[in-house]
Length: 298
Image 1 (cartoon, rainbow, N blue to C red):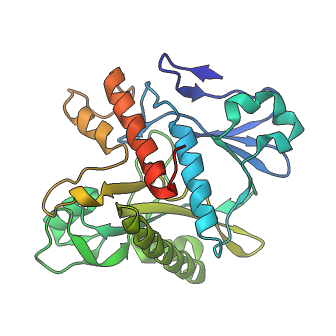
Image 2: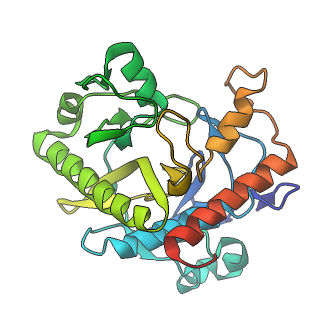
C-alpha cells in the first residue's frame, strides 16, 4: 500500500489477487465469485487525478455509500459486505482495507453515467446560459445560478476512461446504447432515488443539488452499483448558507476545484500538488458530510 506524506492512501497492492481496474478513486480486485472495491484517498478534479490525497476520504465515500444502501433497502444493490475479514485472503490486509472497502456482486455495469440535476449549477448552468437548455432539454427563462429547477432533470453522459472527459448524451442516446426498456427503468429509478434522498438530506441540513448514479444488470435485474450519493458523486450544499444567484458553500471537492481555478494550470495531467491546508479543509468537508447525513461521526 502506498500512502502520501499526509497519511492518505494513494495506491493499493494485494499480491495474489488480480487488480481488474484502477479508477480515479477506486481500485477493484477480482475475488473470483465477487469483486473487492477499495476506495483510496485519491482525488480527481477536472478529470485529472491529483498527486495529493485527502486523508480518510475513501472511508467517508464507503461509509456514506453503505448508509444510502441501507436507506434505500427497497432498491437492489451490489453490496455483499463491508467486512473484509469474511474473506481469508484479505485478513492480513484488514488494517489497510477496513472502513474503505466493499465486497460486491459482479454486475454488468451499463456504460452510462446517470446524472440527475435538481438545481441549475456547474456545467448545467453554463449550458443554460448559452442555449436556454440543459443537455438538450429546453428550460423556461428566468433561472439564475443555483436556482432550484421546477422538476429534476435526467441528464446522462457517457462513462469515460481515466484522464478522459465524459460526454453528455440525450435520453435517445441512452436508448440506443442499452435499449428503450432498460433506459426508462434506470432514468425513473435515478429520479426516484434522487428525490427521496434530497428530501432526507434537506432534513439533515444539506441540499442535494445534483448527483450521478451507476446501474448494472444481474440475471436480468437492474442493480444499483458503485458509490451512491457521496461528496464525490454529488454536489452537497449547506442549506443554511444557500442563496440563489451565488455559488453555494459545498461539502464536496468544489473547494479543491475553486483553489485549482486560481492556479496557472491547463487542467491536464499531471495535476498540481495541493497545499496541506487545502487537503485538511477538504478532508473536514467530507467528514462533515458524513456526520450530517448519518447523524454520527465517522
